[in-house]
Image (cartoon, rainbow, N blue to C red; front, side, top):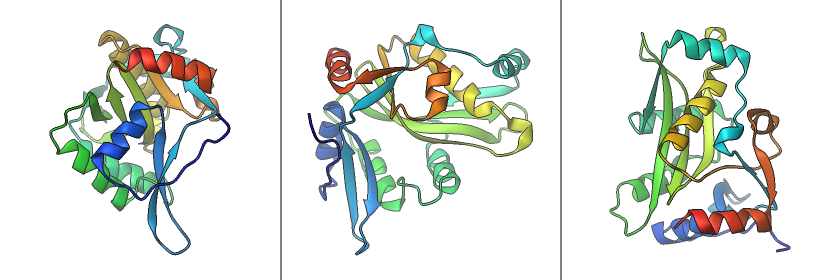
Amino acid sequence: MNENYYWSDDFSNEFYIKAAQCGFITTSMYTKDNLFILLPEIQYEYAILNFEDIKIDKKVKKILEKKEYKFTINERFDEVLNKIQGYHKNSWINDNYIKIINNIKNTKLNSNFKFITIEVSDLVTNKLISGEIGYKIGKTYTSLSGFTTREKKYNYWGKLQLVLLNDFLKNNDYKLWNLGHPQLQYKIDLGAKIYNRKDFIDRWKSSIK
């Protein structure tokens, strides 16, 4: 209970999935010697959004009313990953990490684990505007990383994507949405509550079955 970050050079499907099932969120980095390693973290605190607690910005409500968007799941998987890499400078979702994602995605697993991409596109142009990648374990969903376009005409579409994702999870009987680190203000603004490690793990164990 006193440590949070670990590292591993085990890139197997089994290791990644087992770490996720235990509540670790695994990112990655390159060492000063340019060695690629995984960084599983069992966090001290987690942001969890209980679906009924969602707070919807007025400008997002206006976008919802216009219905000029399309919400999809896993239809633009590779494109979402490419967009995330381009959006974040030195993204930890790098080429080696994507190899791990695709290896798990393309392997028939004896597991309740599945990678998921969330996609919000312009209904008219079909341009991908906002999205994220995360994973499903049982009735839980964990957000990993995302992107949204910086074009002014699509302001608030990143928040729109989160609101639509909340509806999707709620309507499909998920029990828990793990947003990871609670330090980013947008998660609290969305309605997420902060759970310490022990309380998170108690909820997590009962939801991943």
